[in-house]
Length: 435
Image 1 (cartoon, rainbow, N blue to C red):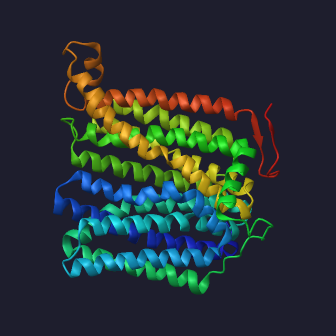
Image 2 (cartoon, helix red, strand yellow):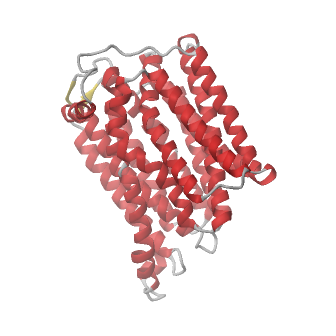
Image 3 (spheres, helix red, strand yellow):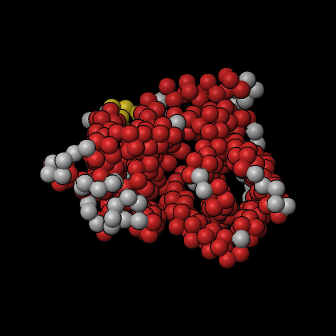
């Protein structure tokens, strides 16, 4: 990988990743602060909902704006707005005036800024990366995201406990300054070629992204595939703490170790992606990677009776995800014209991620109101109790078995749908029937 050809991108990636670590530490510390202050899990969960709602609801319009606006200026403005909200939290904490509603409002603002910044950043990356490095740079992004997922709770907890939340915020602002000044002074982001559609209205521009997707069934089906997987994965996310924290052999430490295994697995997978050569059939690799993920961890959580089995399942389930992400990234960046990427990526965000809150709601409902009561009513000598246990958490284990079947079914259905498409990055835009 030639560093010179990627100099601007590596500068952008490294400093933005550092800033993301700082922002993640602040978010994590605010969760700790709010929970310790209120003792309410619902109030704490609403922090994430306030951040996520603008992303799902406004993404389709944010992409249209991103395609119209200068990418570098958009990223700088959104970064600055997010930093100012962090400063506001710091001032409120130091003046002992911080209220819960302040956090909800500021999280919603941050979510809105991220909604606009994310498609601009995606397009900027496409414009800075030579096509032959799409896969390897996707591995770099997965690497930094995985590393941040490991480091964020460790560093944030240490700083929060030893020095307080104001120190965490100070570190966040330092990392922001480094990323902001690097982008402002040292990175030149080229703008995609202007088209006749540049001056069209916001609604027309957003509609054009949806029309483009409708006319490109491979990309649309890949998005719908991920939306279905996200629904299953979100049920998993809702059920995991319910099972691990309830089992006699589980607990908070075991849950923490499992999360660390997830981070390490994605880290290793990210390194692997940066080292391997391009596969002949990227669509097939995506399908196989997701099938492996869905067919391992869920069943090992369902039937495994020990933390060791659960951790092995976490590694097997998450190790293929960076490979899937990298190949998906290459197809999207190659197939979608740069001048359309903001709109299409934002349509993708709305379609692909709206299933996540639905999955969380479904997972919580299924655990509390369906599967746990069902398993509790089973006699001790029943077949299901012998498979999933009789103590609290057995219902969540049964749910993992159900979503394991659902996940495999989704993979098989979309594999059959996607099998007919023959795609080559040497001929982007030309999608024929596979033989």
